[in-house]
Length: 262
Image 1 (tube, rainbow, N blue to C red):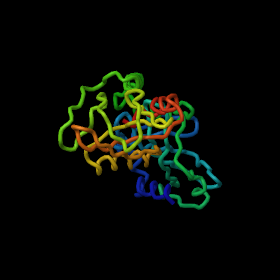
Image 2 (image 1 turned 180 degrees about the vertical axis):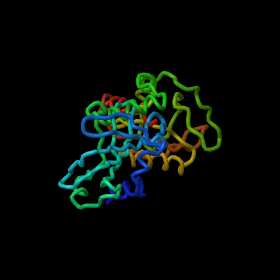
Image 3 (image 1 turned 135 degrees about the horizontal axis):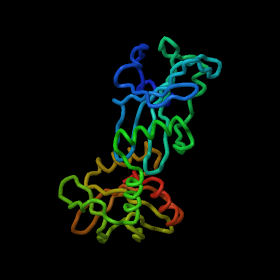
C-alpha cells in the first residue's frame, strides 16, 4: 500500500502518445529492443542525490507477467557518492498510453524500496551518465568531498553558533552533562558510551528542529534519535545521532557508505 501511494503521487496523470515527443522528453539511447527517454524537467540534484523520471518505449510490445507493456515509466534516485540507484516507483502503459492497472503487474511491485549498484543495470547506467552530464556533476569530486568529510578535513568554513536556532560547531568538545552516562569522543563524528558507539549528525538549540532532522533520517532508513544535553555556558542542546554500533569500525563504515547523512 505504501509503495502504491508513492507511485500514484509520483506519476498520477495519464499521458497521450504525443507527449512522448514533447521537448521535455529527450531520447538518450536506443537498444535492440527499446528506446530510452528522460524527462528533463524532472532532473534535480540535492546534496549530490539526483532524482529523475525516465521512460522506456518498446516498439514491439514487451510482455510482463503476460501483460503487453509498451511504455515503462520509472523514477529513480541516484546516490552519486555511493554509486547506487534506487527505483522509487514505476508505471506501466499500453500502446494508447493508458495506465495499466492489471493485478498481474501489481505483483511486480517491490515490497520495499531497495537500491542497486548503478553499473549492474544497463538502462540505469545510461540514464545516470546522461544526468551527470546534464547537471555537470563529477562523481570523483563528490566522492573526494565525502572522503574529506569523513577524515575530518574542513570542506566548508566553520559555522559560528548564535543564540537562535543554529547548528553547534562540531569541532568543539565542551564539557557535557549527559544524565549519569560518561561519554568519550572518539573522532569528529563518533562517540562512545558503555561500550556502544554512535554517530553525531548535528546538534540544535531547537528541539523541534532536531526532531525534524531525526525524523527525516529515519524515513530514509537510518536509526536516528535525539539526545538532550545541558552544556555549561552554552545551555541546552538537542543532538541528532545514529546508532548504536558495536565498534568504531562499524560506525566508520556506516559513514563511508552514507556520507549524505550530514
